[in-house]
Length: 136
Figure 1: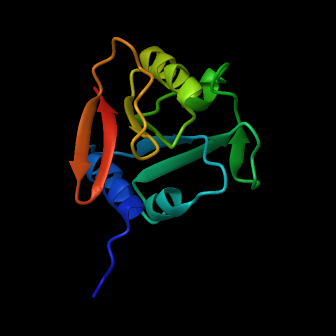
Figure 2: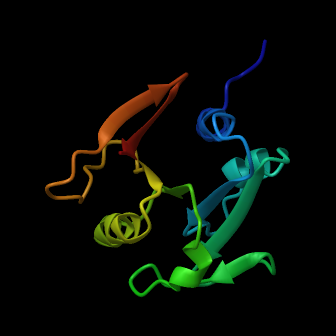
């Protein structure tokens, strides 16, 4: 009996998207905090180039970045951005970043929390037992 980890579902979904691209697939996790389930899963794949960011990095391999004033150099050539349980007030900044760089955006809010993404049609997606919002 294997218990399915919902975070692994998110990692699997991102990896599945990455396989559609011939070359390296560049992914940024915004606001990683001290939670590494998804990034640890994605790090197993050679075709995924993963960048982790946080305003207060807890490890050496995490770039310091403020989503309210992002360092756009970190996001150069990025194919997908994801954020797990981003604070409600930071969600519009994720949308703004997505608009600047044109990457796919995935937001996994707290369970039961509404998104703060006015006028943006993010689709609710369920993959295995994981639900999240994706744009485009």
